[in-house]
Image (tube, rainbow, N blue to C red; front, side, top):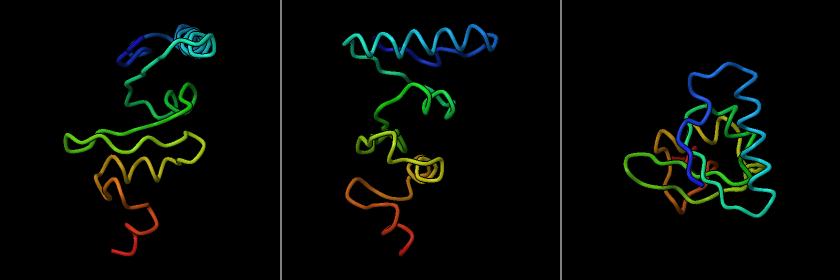
Length: 91
């Protein structure tokens, strides 16, 4: 299933139910791709995260390895596929 902004414009209760449904669907073995600009939503439902910046898809990272700061760097195109956040700061 591919969903884009799944909780955009809904109340908090509906958003919570939608997010839980996505998590449950993934846990049942379905592939779920969530496209969202809501980082709270991404961290709540994602097990892996990739970012599109300047038309390019980043590497895929385990969600547990990313922070808001690292996602911000990816979103800003601060480093490429082979660099890490740490080496990007050295530039």
